[in-house]
Length: 154
Image 1 (tube, rainbow, N blue to C red):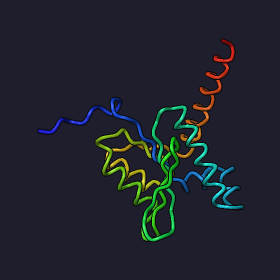
Image 2: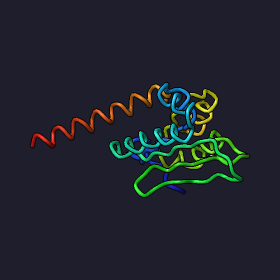
Image 3: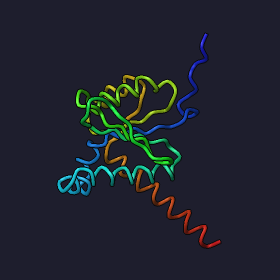
Image 4: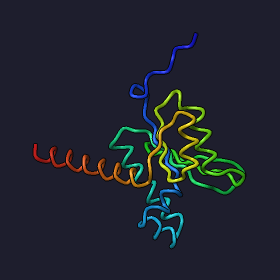
């Protein structure tokens, strides 16, 4: 008989971010998106990379894409970034990841899409809003700045 999965608190934490959901909900990213989509995406990726570095939480960002199939782009030490293919949506990519890995990892999905939230929860994942994610990112930055100040005083 297989060993039951560890409790949520014992499993590695993974944050999956519905990229365009965040871009359209955060005014500063929405303004960047109006000028150039790639700049808004890169700014979000930069914020999420900093969060991954300070929190220890593995972060994946998923964007609606073009092309024939889903592809991944990441740099060493950076977050994983997925672009859905033209035939799929970011939501379907997120759902596949959560369905496959929610029993192994403690997965939280950041999205403001209510249907996506319900689907994620039905697969055993958790959900947070764009507002909650913004607070998490700010708190992580504050903790990092406090650590830097503490180290400088030594």
